[in-house]
Length: 416
Image (tube, rainbow, N blue to C red):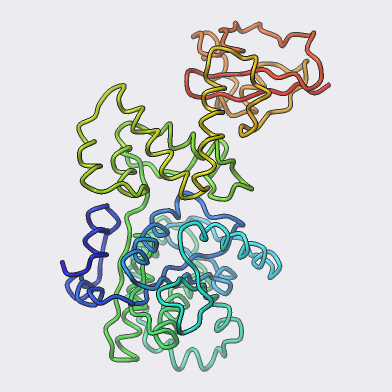
């Protein structure tokens, strides 16, 4: 392929589908092309599920192209039906504005942003589709845009077909989402000269609608490229823990917990994640593909260090490594020195079973009891029995290390 971006994107596993790979390759062989990816701003932080499109845009910029981040200040008010069984809750303008600030801060570690001027090269820009959707004239929109869409075609897309086949309600509001997203692509084409949209594989139908709208209305070929969804080797979606989503913002998840998530991924997923989420050269990662057994732990640390340094900065690694050494070593006298691990406030009278569930070390009371019977629960590195009670001579502020197996640990802080 001619395009250096496509060559690396394919080699690292970022490409799932394209509308016309040969034409995209030709188009992207010239630097300075604009491409966009969209995010609805339904929360104050992005999460691990967004990482593949984010890293794709990071690679896009690395190879000399200009990323456009489209935030859905308008479409967030509608809700994307793609592969969802429920309609998203409506957010106020104030909530959307707060979420927008949080998402911008999540993206800044990945992309170099500019001021949007004509001389800022391939610096990324952020555009809000509320600029054109909030004051749209419905009758004009139907006449000028709606006429290009076939209901038969739209029903055939997987995102809609799957929902209808499961007898889940698809409101007219949601059904309009793909038209609005197609209109976003059309506006970015007209306003910014953007001819390629990138996104997750669940966005394929929406992307194709935009490609077809530009072709019909402007007689120009536009392009779509999708990423694979982030899944584990057994096909499950990545990015979920017992505590919920793995957030990119440190306001929602500490850098230490983020690092630990990647440190504890399954062996079978490590190499794939190395390609996707580290800056290691491809040839270097290929040499690691034969690693097995205990040696995988060293690769997991490389993976965790690589992605955490990008998301939270290289300076975060020193304190994370210190905390990891402190919390997993055999001495518990230095727990007070570990400041990057969240502490769980606990009363002396609390049941150890309840604590295990509250801290998410165990999924249920039954799970906690099974782990204790199997000698898998430790307090300050000592296995406990089911009748264990917290020491009553503890004082306010005293710390204990509670562990489930070898990998899951929290620090308990006694509160009178």
